[in-house]
Image (cartoon, rainbow, N blue to C red):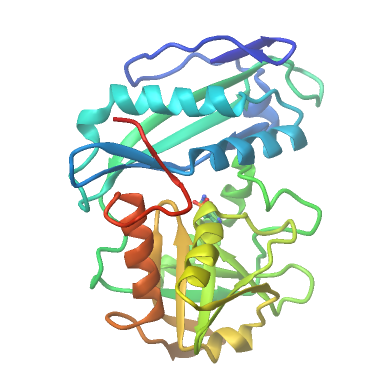
Length: 315
Ligand code: PMP
């Protein structure tokens, strides 16, 4: 879908997956004027297919587009384009519980600009890819390294948006951590270096008794759609859910820690390492994260009642 006329998107077309043409002076290539989203289509037990809160992704993209001065598709255009793309790829949606079809909407400045300016034209496209489950229930939990040298985002920056240029600056620290055997890095805030923020591609929660806490977003943390849903599910389950500043000490003192995101779902964290100190957490059967995982997965695949109306069935 292209916007060429004062921010109005023309009707898009479905094309086989392949390379796209792009002008070398496009603002996305030169100035990083681009956003992405991550979504999933889930197969139900009855063979149908459903999305999870797709309008939230559309709204998050619109918010990012406002900041990056790009035209964005309307919520209706966004959700319809996602539906059409999934329907055209429905044979790639794995069987219920065995994975999902990952959906990647992109919005980028495709117009040519030589000065440091936003492009007058933007392109919206979607591609998909089948994925297995990140956490299979019973598979190895994540082990995180608390990273002190490089923050992921700065106050008043774009950490709260799915801006394409938020990701490459932390490739190197994540690569180093993975080479040492960690699953990923848990970043600290850029000012005091003592509050946890998030992981490279997911949000973080801690559990202490019947209270779950997650860092307040405050512009430096991506407001995850999974994160927002978990807060509601936790309250439905009678837990207390808090959004607040979470100091490293509270993480080290937690009963459980877990990550949340579209790609990772709810994934338990088995250990966190800080200053060479490794602390382990409860995982598996009977944990709060397992209960939240079962509930979220049940709603996403249509196995449990969807009292909030989050699922959008497409066939
Ligand atoms: N934080 C970051 C940096 C991410 O890239 C993602 C993945 N979109 C998340 C958190 C989780 O967000 P969501 O639950 O909307 O997928």
